[in-house]
Image 1 (cartoon, rainbow, N blue to C red):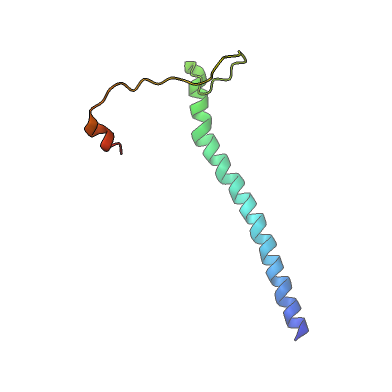
Image 2 (image 1 turned 60 degrees about the horizontal axis):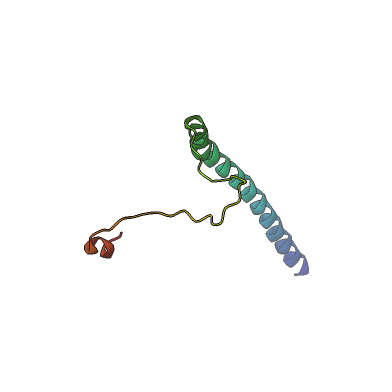
Length: 82
């Protein structure tokens, strides 16, 4: 009986290790595909067009808050934002 329990425990540990390895490999490939097909081209196109998605300047400012002026809208539009 002890040998059966030991075999089942070893089998379970082996499957857990295998699943962890497969999970790591799949995550790597899926994230690489997402980067090379999604994020990479957007970054290249942005660089070509001179777009800066983040303000990474080193200058000191009193506030880094960016004021957005949405303007005055109708009251009904505020109730139905989505």
